[in-house]
Image (cartoon, rainbow, N blue to C red; front, side):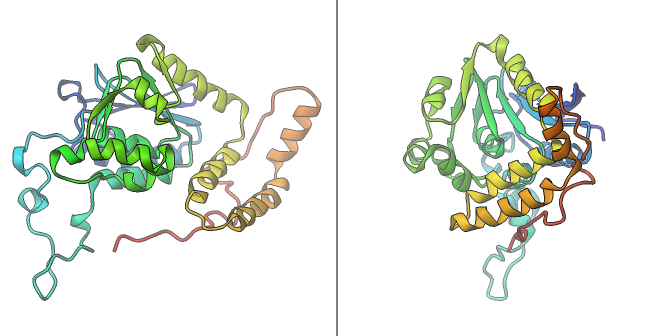
Length: 296
């Protein structure tokens, strides 16, 4: 697929997705939404992709929604035409045209079967920061800035961030940032546990790639895919028994696999493991264990 708003580059089993509208600080638009979803679709199908890094071109990560439509930027009816109406004249909120575009991106990232690392090189506000919340690890440059600016624009948080953000940083920190809408530096993001580390600008991509290479070189792809979904989906479980059920299925199914035999034998023989199972074809029969939610 030819991309216009992002770059899609695979090297050393690492996919780097670069938001690529540097003249607009990589502002998010409908084309970027569609291309990001397509990029994650492609990554999940490609067994040569073991980890994903998302970063921005130029001096920004993503400045948020493209505001070139002015006052109508967030008015769906004005930009796309009226959504469906109910018999009584009220809005039919089940109309897919009502759906938040940023949320469609984060929901796709949430379903991803590969580890996702955000390498935040500069300003990240609005969707520029909320899209990162579905990514697994966020590393920031000292030049990065963050802002959940929705209250200052008269709207509300999007991209399913009301689910993700409190789970990552806690409810009090999430509310402080969203109530005030202020833009804050990388060190505050680190103190608030939004990012895992802050590094000099020149060290950002090397740091992210070193982590991605460690994952790609030493781990079993199917195990990593399962771990990612286990961890994220158990954040919404109502009892540890749900985790025990999924753990037990995983231990049973993977325990009989060639990967596990190779993992044990290679450890005993003190040599690197050569894992053969593929995400595209060798996920266990109990996967997925959840029922997908529909937009209604």
